[in-house]
Length: 309
Ligand SMILES: N[C@@H](CCC(=O)N[C@@H](CS)C(=O)NCC(=O)O)C(=O)O
Image (cartoon, rainbow, N blue to C red; front, top):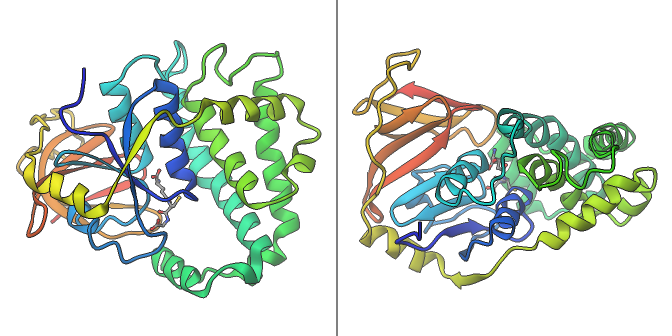
């Protein structure tokens, strides 16, 4: 089904989580609109859309705003089901890999990169990420931990290698899936920043060949748009999200309830609104913003807190 509004990705080129979504555009051959945002706060044209959620990327379709790659990917799969990211037999596991690749694997990757870049990391970036984490972005500690982080990276990559050991092309078989996208993000991030990835992958020939296949997926075709023009689209559009109750919600939440939603790990800024739709994997809340007008902001459930407002 063709979308009425363009598929807009608010992102920055160096963002590994954004790379996941760009590759899904490539795999599904989706034409998209690229809105480049600043790598650090402030993002004055984006906050009216998200209500304060400040992690990257964010997807916008008209006045519907999708936060977090779990939520973005779920919506892309719903709108563009073919080719699927969930081959038979892997539907649950493919989604669940994010809890490995985006958390433990990713934290090790971040520490390895920033510990190695050390004094090349700009002070404004460190200050911004300390605010995001609510904790010190301790580059000296990351540098000291490089030997440990190399061990962690190797152990995680060996799992990719083991998964590809029977000469399959992709982690779930003969078609690329969300498992590949999620795991690849970390390899892509190291490739972008560290000169010795080839040496680190030398003992992993299947992963080396898979990395080249992943890179060849590309990003499909995109057109550029300014942050102001994207905000203008939301202001003129109306949210398209249909009301959806969840009779099995374990806490009795229902459409109409006022809630506050935030990540449970970092960037814990609460976004307030009225529930429009909810399920085990998704919650959509309506907000009214002085600049964006009425918007519906969508979040995943795994890794997110929903609190009464
Ligand atoms: N769970 C989130 C994580 C996103 C994330 O941590 N992104 C990084 C950039 S790649 C970030 O938000 N950094 C801080 C920022 O951009 O404000 C997702 O899947 O989208």
